[in-house]
Picture (spheres, rainbow, N blue to C red):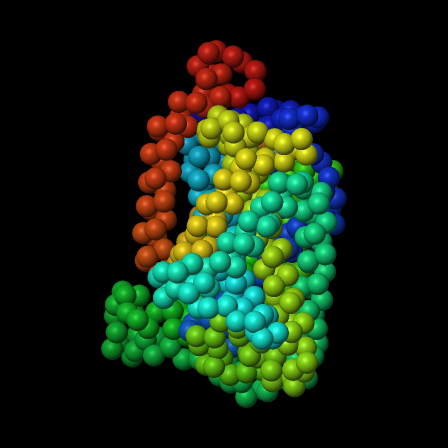
Length: 497
Protein backbone atom coordinates (compact mmCIF):
# COMPACT_ATOMS: atom_id res chain seq x y z
CA UNK A 1 0.00 0.00 0.00
CA UNK A 2 3.07 2.27 0.35
CA UNK A 3 4.19 1.73 -3.24
CA UNK A 4 4.93 5.13 -4.79
CA UNK A 5 5.51 6.67 -8.18
CA UNK A 6 8.87 8.38 -8.54
CA UNK A 7 9.03 12.01 -9.57
CA UNK A 8 11.24 11.19 -12.62
CA UNK A 9 8.69 8.60 -13.76
CA UNK A 10 5.89 11.16 -13.49
CA UNK A 11 7.88 13.78 -15.38
CA UNK A 12 8.61 11.25 -18.14
CA UNK A 13 4.91 10.44 -18.30
CA UNK A 14 4.09 14.14 -18.55
CA UNK A 15 6.50 14.56 -21.47
CA UNK A 16 4.85 11.84 -23.55
CA UNK A 17 3.04 12.98 -26.67
CA UNK A 18 1.40 11.59 -29.76
CA UNK A 19 -1.29 8.99 -30.25
CA UNK A 20 -2.59 7.45 -27.05
CA UNK A 21 -1.88 10.55 -24.94
CA UNK A 22 -3.86 13.65 -24.05
CA UNK A 23 -3.41 16.59 -26.42
CA UNK A 24 -1.76 19.82 -25.18
CA UNK A 25 -4.07 22.66 -26.22
CA UNK A 26 -4.59 24.87 -23.13
CA UNK A 27 -2.79 28.23 -22.67
CA UNK A 28 -2.34 30.10 -19.37
CA UNK A 29 -5.37 32.29 -20.09
CA UNK A 30 -7.34 29.18 -21.02
CA UNK A 31 -6.39 27.61 -17.69
CA UNK A 32 -7.50 30.71 -15.75
CA UNK A 33 -10.79 30.62 -17.67
CA UNK A 34 -11.07 26.92 -16.87
CA UNK A 35 -10.70 27.69 -13.17
CA UNK A 36 -13.14 30.61 -13.23
CA UNK A 37 -15.52 28.46 -15.24
CA UNK A 38 -15.46 25.80 -12.54
CA UNK A 39 -15.74 28.20 -9.61
CA UNK A 40 -18.44 30.76 -10.41
CA UNK A 41 -21.78 29.01 -10.49
CA UNK A 42 -24.25 27.35 -8.12
CA UNK A 43 -22.28 28.25 -5.00
CA UNK A 44 -22.48 31.97 -5.70
CA UNK A 45 -25.95 32.16 -7.22
CA UNK A 46 -27.77 29.85 -4.76
CA UNK A 47 -25.77 29.09 -1.61
CA UNK A 48 -24.97 32.73 -0.79
CA UNK A 49 -28.60 33.36 0.11
CA UNK A 50 -28.92 30.10 2.06
CA UNK A 51 -25.77 30.75 4.10
CA UNK A 52 -26.88 34.33 4.83
CA UNK A 53 -30.41 33.35 5.91
CA UNK A 54 -29.53 30.28 7.98
CA UNK A 55 -25.98 30.79 9.20
CA UNK A 56 -24.06 34.04 8.91
CA UNK A 57 -26.42 36.90 8.03
CA UNK A 58 -24.66 39.81 6.24
CA UNK A 59 -21.40 38.37 7.63
CA UNK A 60 -21.60 35.76 4.86
CA UNK A 61 -19.01 38.08 3.32
CA UNK A 62 -16.63 37.02 6.12
CA UNK A 63 -17.60 33.39 5.48
CA UNK A 64 -16.44 33.81 1.89
CA UNK A 65 -13.13 35.27 3.07
CA UNK A 66 -12.55 32.33 5.46
CA UNK A 67 -13.40 29.81 2.75
CA UNK A 68 -11.13 31.65 0.30
CA UNK A 69 -8.31 31.65 2.86
CA UNK A 70 -8.48 27.86 3.17
CA UNK A 71 -8.56 27.58 -0.61
CA UNK A 72 -5.61 29.97 -0.96
CA UNK A 73 -3.42 27.86 1.33
CA UNK A 74 -4.43 24.71 -0.52
CA UNK A 75 -4.11 26.49 -3.88
CA UNK A 76 -0.48 27.39 -3.22
CA UNK A 77 0.21 23.73 -2.44
CA UNK A 78 -1.63 22.63 -5.58
CA UNK A 79 0.39 25.10 -7.65
CA UNK A 80 3.72 23.63 -6.48
CA UNK A 81 2.59 20.10 -7.32
CA UNK A 82 0.98 21.00 -10.65
CA UNK A 83 4.09 22.84 -11.89
CA UNK A 84 6.43 20.11 -10.67
CA UNK A 85 4.30 17.12 -11.76
CA UNK A 86 2.25 18.30 -14.79
CA UNK A 87 0.28 15.07 -15.16
CA UNK A 88 -3.49 14.60 -15.32
CA UNK A 89 -4.98 13.35 -12.07
CA UNK A 90 -4.77 16.28 -9.65
CA UNK A 91 -4.54 15.34 -5.95
CA UNK A 92 -4.59 11.64 -6.85
CA UNK A 93 -1.28 11.89 -8.71
CA UNK A 94 0.31 14.08 -6.03
CA UNK A 95 -0.67 11.63 -3.29
CA UNK A 96 0.76 8.73 -5.31
CA UNK A 97 4.15 10.46 -5.37
CA UNK A 98 4.17 11.42 -1.68
CA UNK A 99 2.07 9.07 0.45
CA UNK A 100 1.81 5.92 -1.63
CA UNK A 101 -0.69 3.93 -3.63
CA UNK A 102 -3.33 3.31 -0.96
CA UNK A 103 -3.65 7.00 -0.01
CA UNK A 104 -3.67 7.86 -3.72
CA UNK A 105 -6.55 5.46 -4.25
CA UNK A 106 -8.45 6.97 -1.31
CA UNK A 107 -8.04 10.49 -2.71
CA UNK A 108 -8.89 9.41 -6.27
CA UNK A 109 -12.05 7.74 -5.01
CA UNK A 110 -12.82 10.80 -2.89
CA UNK A 111 -12.52 13.09 -5.91
CA UNK A 112 -15.66 11.44 -7.32
CA UNK A 113 -17.49 13.30 -4.54
CA UNK A 114 -16.03 16.58 -5.74
CA UNK A 115 -16.27 16.31 -9.50
CA UNK A 116 -19.04 13.84 -10.35
CA UNK A 117 -21.40 14.72 -7.50
CA UNK A 118 -20.43 18.37 -7.87
CA UNK A 119 -21.66 18.26 -11.46
CA UNK A 120 -24.84 16.52 -10.31
CA UNK A 121 -25.43 19.19 -7.65
CA UNK A 122 -25.04 22.02 -10.14
CA UNK A 123 -27.24 20.24 -12.68
CA UNK A 124 -30.05 20.02 -10.09
CA UNK A 125 -29.81 23.76 -9.40
CA UNK A 126 -29.49 24.53 -13.11
CA UNK A 127 -32.88 22.97 -13.76
CA UNK A 128 -34.59 25.35 -11.31
CA UNK A 129 -33.27 28.44 -13.08
CA UNK A 130 -34.06 26.81 -16.44
CA UNK A 131 -37.66 26.49 -15.31
CA UNK A 132 -37.69 30.20 -14.44
CA UNK A 133 -36.23 31.01 -17.87
CA UNK A 134 -38.99 29.05 -19.64
CA UNK A 135 -41.66 30.76 -17.53
CA UNK A 136 -40.51 34.08 -18.98
CA UNK A 137 -41.89 32.76 -22.28
CA UNK A 138 -45.00 31.15 -20.81
CA UNK A 139 -43.64 27.59 -20.93
CA UNK A 140 -44.35 25.45 -17.87
CA UNK A 141 -42.66 22.19 -16.87
CA UNK A 142 -44.64 20.02 -14.42
CA UNK A 143 -43.20 19.80 -10.90
CA UNK A 144 -42.88 16.02 -11.18
CA UNK A 145 -40.34 16.40 -14.01
CA UNK A 146 -38.22 18.98 -12.19
CA UNK A 147 -37.68 17.07 -8.94
CA UNK A 148 -36.71 13.59 -7.86
CA UNK A 149 -38.87 11.22 -5.78
CA UNK A 150 -37.44 12.51 -2.45
CA UNK A 151 -38.67 15.99 -3.33
CA UNK A 152 -42.21 15.06 -4.31
CA UNK A 153 -41.53 14.52 -8.02
CA UNK A 154 -40.55 11.71 -10.37
CA UNK A 155 -37.31 12.74 -12.09
CA UNK A 156 -35.40 15.96 -12.83
CA UNK A 157 -35.39 15.76 -16.63
CA UNK A 158 -33.66 19.10 -17.44
CA UNK A 159 -30.77 18.13 -15.13
CA UNK A 160 -30.31 14.83 -16.96
CA UNK A 161 -30.46 16.48 -20.39
CA UNK A 162 -27.81 19.12 -19.62
CA UNK A 163 -25.42 16.51 -18.18
CA UNK A 164 -25.79 14.38 -21.33
CA UNK A 165 -25.23 17.32 -23.69
CA UNK A 166 -22.08 18.48 -21.90
CA UNK A 167 -20.70 14.94 -21.72
CA UNK A 168 -21.15 14.59 -25.47
CA UNK A 169 -19.30 17.90 -25.96
CA UNK A 170 -16.39 16.62 -23.87
CA UNK A 171 -16.25 13.46 -25.95
CA UNK A 172 -15.77 15.67 -29.00
CA UNK A 173 -12.55 17.23 -27.70
CA UNK A 174 -10.82 19.40 -25.05
CA UNK A 175 -10.13 22.28 -27.45
CA UNK A 176 -13.80 22.55 -28.43
CA UNK A 177 -14.85 22.26 -24.77
CA UNK A 178 -12.36 24.97 -23.73
CA UNK A 179 -13.64 27.32 -26.44
CA UNK A 180 -17.25 26.90 -25.27
CA UNK A 181 -16.13 27.35 -21.65
CA UNK A 182 -14.30 30.61 -22.47
CA UNK A 183 -17.46 32.05 -24.02
CA UNK A 184 -19.56 31.01 -21.01
CA UNK A 185 -17.01 32.52 -18.60
CA UNK A 186 -17.07 35.89 -20.37
CA UNK A 187 -20.88 36.00 -20.20
CA UNK A 188 -21.24 35.12 -16.53
CA UNK A 189 -18.36 37.29 -15.28
CA UNK A 190 -19.83 40.23 -17.20
CA UNK A 191 -23.19 39.79 -15.50
CA UNK A 192 -21.63 39.40 -12.05
CA UNK A 193 -19.84 42.72 -12.64
CA UNK A 194 -23.08 44.32 -13.85
CA UNK A 195 -24.91 43.06 -10.73
CA UNK A 196 -22.23 44.59 -8.49
CA UNK A 197 -22.09 47.87 -10.42
CA UNK A 198 -25.85 48.41 -10.68
CA UNK A 199 -26.65 47.09 -7.22
CA UNK A 200 -24.04 49.10 -5.32
CA UNK A 201 -25.99 52.39 -5.45
CA UNK A 202 -29.15 50.64 -4.19
CA UNK A 203 -27.56 49.15 -1.04
CA UNK A 204 -29.60 49.89 2.09
CA UNK A 205 -27.15 50.19 5.02
CA UNK A 206 -29.90 49.06 7.41
CA UNK A 207 -29.77 45.59 5.83
CA UNK A 208 -26.18 45.23 7.08
CA UNK A 209 -27.18 45.90 10.71
CA UNK A 210 -26.34 43.86 12.68
CA UNK A 211 -23.55 42.69 10.41
CA UNK A 212 -23.01 39.61 12.61
CA UNK A 213 -26.42 38.55 14.02
CA UNK A 214 -26.25 37.30 17.59
CA UNK A 215 -26.10 33.58 18.34
CA UNK A 216 -28.30 32.85 21.36
CA UNK A 217 -26.23 29.80 22.23
CA UNK A 218 -23.00 31.83 22.35
CA UNK A 219 -24.67 34.30 24.71
CA UNK A 220 -25.80 31.42 26.94
CA UNK A 221 -22.28 29.97 26.80
CA UNK A 222 -20.77 33.22 28.06
CA UNK A 223 -23.33 33.47 30.88
CA UNK A 224 -22.77 29.87 32.00
CA UNK A 225 -26.29 28.69 31.08
CA UNK A 226 -24.85 26.32 28.46
CA UNK A 227 -21.72 24.18 28.74
CA UNK A 228 -18.93 24.31 26.14
CA UNK A 229 -19.53 20.83 24.74
CA UNK A 230 -23.30 21.19 25.07
CA UNK A 231 -23.08 24.24 22.82
CA UNK A 232 -21.52 22.20 20.02
CA UNK A 233 -24.25 19.58 20.41
CA UNK A 234 -27.05 22.13 20.51
CA UNK A 235 -29.14 23.52 17.66
CA UNK A 236 -27.58 26.92 18.31
CA UNK A 237 -24.24 25.93 16.82
CA UNK A 238 -23.96 27.29 13.30
CA UNK A 239 -26.91 29.66 13.59
CA UNK A 240 -25.34 33.12 13.42
CA UNK A 241 -22.56 34.51 15.57
CA UNK A 242 -19.00 33.18 15.19
CA UNK A 243 -20.12 29.56 14.80
CA UNK A 244 -22.60 30.70 12.15
CA UNK A 245 -19.83 32.40 10.19
CA UNK A 246 -17.77 29.18 10.34
CA UNK A 247 -20.66 26.99 9.22
CA UNK A 248 -21.43 29.58 6.56
CA UNK A 249 -17.83 29.19 5.38
CA UNK A 250 -18.38 25.44 5.14
CA UNK A 251 -21.57 25.98 3.15
CA UNK A 252 -20.24 28.62 0.72
CA UNK A 253 -17.02 26.64 0.35
CA UNK A 254 -18.94 24.86 -2.40
CA UNK A 255 -18.67 28.16 -4.28
CA UNK A 256 -14.87 27.74 -4.49
CA UNK A 257 -14.86 24.14 -5.60
CA UNK A 258 -13.31 23.93 -9.01
CA UNK A 259 -10.02 25.85 -8.87
CA UNK A 260 -8.24 22.54 -8.38
CA UNK A 261 -9.90 21.26 -11.55
CA UNK A 262 -7.22 23.27 -13.34
CA UNK A 263 -4.64 20.78 -12.07
CA UNK A 264 -6.53 17.85 -13.61
CA UNK A 265 -5.84 19.37 -17.03
CA UNK A 266 -2.07 19.68 -16.43
CA UNK A 267 -1.27 17.14 -19.14
CA UNK A 268 -3.26 19.21 -21.65
CA UNK A 269 -1.49 22.53 -20.89
CA UNK A 270 0.96 23.91 -23.47
CA UNK A 271 3.37 25.19 -20.80
CA UNK A 272 2.32 23.57 -17.49
CA UNK A 273 5.30 24.80 -15.46
CA UNK A 274 4.18 28.39 -16.05
CA UNK A 275 0.49 27.90 -16.76
CA UNK A 276 -0.47 25.76 -13.76
CA UNK A 277 0.38 28.30 -11.00
CA UNK A 278 -1.16 31.12 -13.05
CA UNK A 279 -4.32 29.11 -13.72
CA UNK A 280 -4.82 27.94 -10.13
CA UNK A 281 -3.91 31.09 -8.21
CA UNK A 282 -5.21 33.50 -10.85
CA UNK A 283 -8.69 31.97 -10.98
CA UNK A 284 -8.87 31.87 -7.17
CA UNK A 285 -7.91 35.55 -6.79
CA UNK A 286 -10.39 36.70 -9.45
CA UNK A 287 -13.27 34.72 -7.95
CA UNK A 288 -12.57 35.69 -4.33
CA UNK A 289 -12.71 39.39 -5.18
CA UNK A 290 -15.97 38.92 -7.10
CA UNK A 291 -17.51 36.81 -4.31
CA UNK A 292 -16.82 39.30 -1.54
CA UNK A 293 -18.24 42.22 -3.53
CA UNK A 294 -21.19 40.16 -4.80
CA UNK A 295 -22.25 38.92 -1.34
CA UNK A 296 -21.88 42.40 0.16
CA UNK A 297 -24.15 43.90 -2.50
CA UNK A 298 -26.70 41.08 -2.32
CA UNK A 299 -27.16 41.29 1.46
CA UNK A 300 -27.27 45.08 1.15
CA UNK A 301 -30.09 45.03 -1.39
CA UNK A 302 -32.37 42.74 0.64
CA UNK A 303 -32.64 41.71 4.30
CA UNK A 304 -30.83 38.40 4.76
CA UNK A 305 -33.84 36.83 6.54
CA UNK A 306 -35.89 37.02 3.34
CA UNK A 307 -33.48 34.66 1.55
CA UNK A 308 -34.68 31.71 3.67
CA UNK A 309 -35.98 28.97 1.39
CA UNK A 310 -35.37 31.13 -1.69
CA UNK A 311 -33.95 29.04 -4.54
CA UNK A 312 -33.28 32.19 -6.58
CA UNK A 313 -31.88 34.75 -4.08
CA UNK A 314 -29.95 36.69 -6.73
CA UNK A 315 -33.12 37.44 -8.67
CA UNK A 316 -34.85 38.44 -5.42
CA UNK A 317 -32.09 40.87 -4.52
CA UNK A 318 -31.73 42.26 -8.04
CA UNK A 319 -35.45 43.15 -8.07
CA UNK A 320 -34.62 45.91 -5.56
CA UNK A 321 -32.62 47.75 -8.20
CA UNK A 322 -35.67 48.39 -10.35
CA UNK A 323 -33.90 47.05 -13.44
CA UNK A 324 -36.57 44.39 -13.94
CA UNK A 325 -36.04 44.41 -17.70
CA UNK A 326 -32.69 42.72 -17.05
CA UNK A 327 -34.22 39.77 -15.16
CA UNK A 328 -34.17 37.49 -18.20
CA UNK A 329 -30.56 38.40 -18.96
CA UNK A 330 -29.66 37.67 -15.35
CA UNK A 331 -31.23 34.21 -15.52
CA UNK A 332 -29.41 33.48 -18.79
CA UNK A 333 -26.12 34.49 -17.17
CA UNK A 334 -26.76 32.22 -14.21
CA UNK A 335 -27.55 29.34 -16.56
CA UNK A 336 -24.30 29.92 -18.43
CA UNK A 337 -22.45 30.03 -15.12
CA UNK A 338 -23.90 26.71 -14.08
CA UNK A 339 -23.18 25.22 -17.49
CA UNK A 340 -19.47 26.09 -17.43
CA UNK A 341 -19.13 24.67 -13.91
CA UNK A 342 -20.63 21.35 -15.00
CA UNK A 343 -18.41 21.29 -18.07
CA UNK A 344 -15.22 21.64 -16.04
CA UNK A 345 -16.39 19.24 -13.31
CA UNK A 346 -17.12 16.53 -15.87
CA UNK A 347 -13.77 17.16 -17.57
CA UNK A 348 -11.92 16.94 -14.25
CA UNK A 349 -13.59 13.68 -13.26
CA UNK A 350 -12.77 11.98 -16.54
CA UNK A 351 -9.08 13.01 -16.26
CA UNK A 352 -8.77 11.62 -12.73
CA UNK A 353 -10.20 8.23 -13.74
CA UNK A 354 -8.10 8.28 -16.93
CA UNK A 355 -4.95 8.53 -14.81
CA UNK A 356 -6.09 5.90 -12.30
CA UNK A 357 -6.82 3.53 -15.17
CA UNK A 358 -3.37 4.15 -16.69
CA UNK A 359 -1.94 3.03 -13.34
CA UNK A 360 -4.01 -0.16 -13.41
CA UNK A 361 -6.16 0.72 -10.39
CA UNK A 362 -9.28 0.91 -12.57
CA UNK A 363 -10.30 -1.17 -15.62
CA UNK A 364 -8.45 -0.35 -18.84
CA UNK A 365 -11.43 1.07 -20.72
CA UNK A 366 -11.33 4.19 -18.49
CA UNK A 367 -8.08 5.19 -20.23
CA UNK A 368 -9.12 4.34 -23.80
CA UNK A 369 -8.87 7.43 -25.99
CA UNK A 370 -10.88 8.34 -29.06
CA UNK A 371 -9.38 9.55 -32.36
CA UNK A 372 -9.73 13.07 -30.91
CA UNK A 373 -7.60 11.99 -27.92
CA UNK A 374 -10.35 12.22 -25.32
CA UNK A 375 -11.24 9.53 -22.74
CA UNK A 376 -14.68 9.11 -24.28
CA UNK A 377 -15.58 5.88 -22.48
CA UNK A 378 -14.98 7.54 -19.11
CA UNK A 379 -17.13 10.48 -20.22
CA UNK A 380 -19.84 8.04 -21.21
CA UNK A 381 -19.76 6.18 -17.87
CA UNK A 382 -19.98 9.40 -15.88
CA UNK A 383 -22.68 10.77 -18.14
CA UNK A 384 -24.84 7.90 -16.89
CA UNK A 385 -23.61 8.05 -13.27
CA UNK A 386 -23.98 11.82 -12.87
CA UNK A 387 -27.35 11.82 -14.67
CA UNK A 388 -28.78 9.36 -12.16
CA UNK A 389 -27.72 11.47 -9.18
CA UNK A 390 -28.81 14.73 -10.83
CA UNK A 391 -32.18 13.30 -11.75
CA UNK A 392 -33.10 11.61 -8.49
CA UNK A 393 -31.07 12.81 -5.44
CA UNK A 394 -31.95 16.03 -3.52
CA UNK A 395 -29.54 18.89 -4.18
CA UNK A 396 -28.89 19.64 -0.48
CA UNK A 397 -27.63 16.12 0.22
CA UNK A 398 -25.36 16.26 -2.82
CA UNK A 399 -23.91 19.65 -1.86
CA UNK A 400 -22.74 18.59 1.60
CA UNK A 401 -21.10 15.43 0.23
CA UNK A 402 -19.23 17.50 -2.34
CA UNK A 403 -17.94 20.00 0.24
CA UNK A 404 -16.63 17.45 2.73
CA UNK A 405 -15.05 15.34 -0.01
CA UNK A 406 -13.23 18.34 -1.46
CA UNK A 407 -12.00 19.59 1.91
CA UNK A 408 -10.58 16.12 2.56
CA UNK A 409 -8.72 16.25 -0.77
CA UNK A 410 -7.32 19.72 0.00
CA UNK A 411 -6.08 18.52 3.39
CA UNK A 412 -4.14 15.63 1.85
CA UNK A 413 -2.56 17.91 -0.78
CA UNK A 414 -1.31 20.23 1.98
CA UNK A 415 0.17 17.24 3.81
CA UNK A 416 1.72 16.01 0.55
CA UNK A 417 3.73 19.21 0.01
CA UNK A 418 5.38 18.87 3.42
CA UNK A 419 6.11 15.18 2.84
CA UNK A 420 7.70 15.79 -0.58
CA UNK A 421 9.86 18.64 0.74
CA UNK A 422 11.36 16.10 3.15
CA UNK A 423 11.62 13.08 0.83
CA UNK A 424 12.58 14.89 -2.41
CA UNK A 425 14.14 18.21 -1.39
CA UNK A 426 16.32 18.53 -4.52
CA UNK A 427 13.60 17.97 -7.12
CA UNK A 428 13.27 21.07 -9.40
CA UNK A 429 10.24 23.13 -8.46
CA UNK A 430 9.21 25.75 -11.08
CA UNK A 431 6.86 27.14 -8.42
CA UNK A 432 7.51 26.82 -4.69
CA UNK A 433 4.83 27.15 -2.02
CA UNK A 434 6.08 29.95 0.28
CA UNK A 435 6.61 29.56 4.03
CA UNK A 436 6.56 25.77 4.20
CA UNK A 437 5.49 24.23 6.58
CA UNK A 438 3.44 27.21 7.81
CA UNK A 439 1.23 27.59 4.71
CA UNK A 440 0.38 23.85 4.43
CA UNK A 441 -0.33 23.62 8.18
CA UNK A 442 -2.64 26.63 8.02
CA UNK A 443 -4.38 25.04 5.03
CA UNK A 444 -4.90 21.83 6.99
CA UNK A 445 -6.25 23.69 10.04
CA UNK A 446 -8.73 25.82 8.05
CA UNK A 447 -9.96 22.87 5.95
CA UNK A 448 -10.48 20.62 8.98
CA UNK A 449 -12.27 23.46 10.80
CA UNK A 450 -14.70 23.81 7.88
CA UNK A 451 -15.18 20.03 7.75
CA UNK A 452 -15.97 20.02 11.47
CA UNK A 453 -18.63 22.68 10.93
CA UNK A 454 -20.60 20.51 8.48
CA UNK A 455 -23.52 18.30 9.67
CA UNK A 456 -22.72 14.84 11.09
CA UNK A 457 -24.65 13.25 8.20
CA UNK A 458 -21.94 14.49 5.84
CA UNK A 459 -19.31 12.59 7.82
CA UNK A 460 -21.42 9.44 7.82
CA UNK A 461 -21.87 9.53 4.04
CA UNK A 462 -18.16 10.19 3.55
CA UNK A 463 -17.33 7.15 5.69
CA UNK A 464 -19.72 4.91 3.73
CA UNK A 465 -18.36 6.11 0.38
CA UNK A 466 -14.77 5.57 1.52
CA UNK A 467 -15.60 2.07 2.78
CA UNK A 468 -16.98 1.15 -0.65
CA UNK A 469 -13.81 2.49 -2.27
CA UNK A 470 -11.50 0.56 0.08
CA UNK A 471 -13.33 -2.69 -0.69
CA UNK A 472 -12.96 -2.06 -4.44
CA UNK A 473 -9.24 -1.32 -4.02
CA UNK A 474 -8.53 -4.64 -2.33
CA UNK A 475 -10.73 -6.60 -4.75
CA UNK A 476 -9.46 -5.00 -7.98
CA UNK A 477 -7.01 -2.08 -7.72
CA UNK A 478 -4.33 -3.72 -5.57
CA UNK A 479 -4.28 -6.84 -7.76
CA UNK A 480 -3.95 -4.91 -11.04
CA UNK A 481 -1.59 -2.12 -9.93
CA UNK A 482 1.17 -1.56 -12.52
CA UNK A 483 3.43 0.06 -9.93
CA UNK A 484 3.11 -2.90 -7.59
CA UNK A 485 3.67 -5.40 -10.41
CA UNK A 486 6.82 -3.57 -11.57
CA UNK A 487 8.32 -3.42 -8.08
CA UNK A 488 7.51 -7.05 -7.26
CA UNK A 489 9.06 -8.10 -10.58
CA UNK A 490 12.26 -6.32 -9.57
CA UNK A 491 12.16 -3.71 -12.31
CA UNK A 492 14.27 -0.73 -11.20
CA UNK A 493 13.02 1.78 -13.73
CA UNK A 494 10.08 4.08 -13.04
CA UNK A 495 8.31 3.56 -9.71
CA UNK A 496 9.90 2.79 -6.40
CA UNK A 497 8.67 1.70 -3.03
